[in-house]
Image 1 (cartoon, helix red, strand yellow):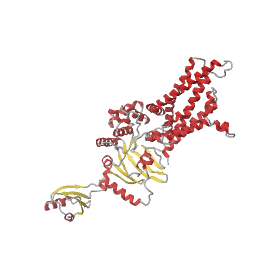
Image 2: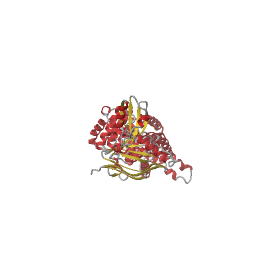
Image 3: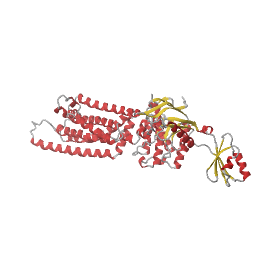
Image 4: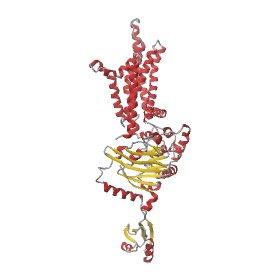
Length: 326
Length: 249
């Protein structure tokens, strides 16, 4: 049976003592979807990841992987999951080949399929040249790649990556992002990261968790619609005063960036671009740049977290210590 | 699955210098003791009237060697078992095992089989010494087999205990220290028999007593069962502890 919802998390909660790390979270991930998981430190990201991968039992709620109950049939459900924890789980005394073979075996890859599974994983992660080398002697970036290869060796339906690009150089980061996009075509991917542009470029959907609760949840395509452009960046060679700009029709307010650049805010439904161009021609301001400012994920993230934290400051006893859970 | 983990564990053990160092040290020390006992025995034999001789080489040399080896294992087993789970936890590789489709039972039994693979190698090397006596005289093969079985059961039960303590912590040194303490206590419990009234039942718990009986060539099911209980008890405790890992508070 082709099941389109590969991961389903229903009302999952988790406490550490009296500290609530994850509070009543629900979400779904469909086949062919990359879900970005964001949150400040100690928000419960790793706890959630550990629960979805079966490393940690939730205290309430249900988790289904590929339609299989993770709590009732953990072994069958786990066979569909590939997990890259925050700390790469590597046996440093093993060679890359030995390590990957062991990972393939414990993930139920049949003996006959192991060689091809290893080749595919190594090729995807750029490890073909270093199969015979000891993992302990590899650089951090290569170790990270080996850890990613481990997560995809049994071509699981669901790949869960906790901060996969830590310690990689910019070229490797690009390769890994591309790999994540490729994985997203056939598998479901859950990706946690602190690097917001990374989420923006690789994910279809994003959810933000703060203090154990999902506070934001939207597809990146919707981002544009729910947060429409309400600001233009304009540069002039012979700039007018801010007051002159503000007096223009449709302009709501103006913010000076530097002597030649302005941020012009307006009502999203009524762009003043045309008016600005005409005014520039008429008054010889020599317009050199006029760019719509898309609200970035980063701004949304900061907005949500700061407003959420402010409202919760007096309810919560303090952030939960994520390191201790690891 | 158990076999996969056992093979990986055995490989990891032999990739570390610790395993080779222990094999080497144990072999040298035991060889010294064995040689000393053997030469004493040969010296005495010249002076003793064969008709009053009650114990042969099988007991005076071989059983004595195994008794010493048994005591040495109190020090050796913790060194080998301390890293089994504790190190996986410290290196964050436990997540790899826990998120794979394998049960805690597979992990514990695999690791147990792996470390027993190592101890079997050590056991074989040590057994070469008593076997060499077959070339020079009449040796009671029954006693020798009982000794081999005794050491094997002792290694199994000690390893199970060490494995359990390794599941409790992320510090191999802590696992080693607690295992050492427990094994030592288990070993010396038999002195209670002679010192305190009413507590003689504690003596039954002493590993040394049961081990000693087997070394004399007495194959009593009571002693075998004692070791089997130890093995099962601590393996089950280890499996339970690893399951509990996921529900930790």
